[in-house]
Length: 146
Image 1 (tube, rainbow, N blue to C red):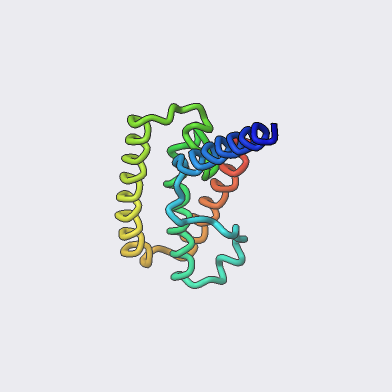
Image 2 (image 1 turned 90 degrees about the horizontal axis):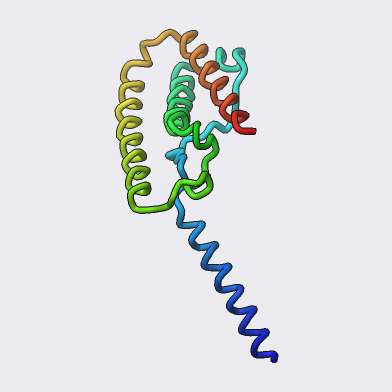
C-alpha cells in the first residue's frame, strides 16, 4: 500500500515537473531585446539632462516600442507565450515568431545606427518632447489590457 502511494506521488510530481519544464521552454511573444524602461521622467528632469543622456533614453524607448507595438492585439506584457493567448504551439507558428523576432532585431540595429548618427543634430527640446511622448505611449500600453 505504501509503495502504491509513493509511486502515485512520484508519478504526480514527475508529470507536474514535465509540465513546468514545457512551460519554461515556450517562447514569449514579446521579446524586449534587453531594453526596458526603468523610470518615467518629468519634463523638467529631462531638460536638465545632457543631449547624450537624452539620446540614450530616446533609443531605449524606441527599442521597447518596436518590440511591443506589433503584438498589442495579442498581449502587451513580456513573458506571455503563444499558448497563453490560444495560438497553437507548432512548427509553423514557432517559425513565424522566430522570423518576426529576427526581422525586428535587424530593423532595430539599423534604426539605432541611424539614431546615433543623426539624432545628435536634433534640437534638445525635440528630444525631450519625443521622450515624453514615447513614455506616454508606454504608460498607456501598460494599462491597455488591465
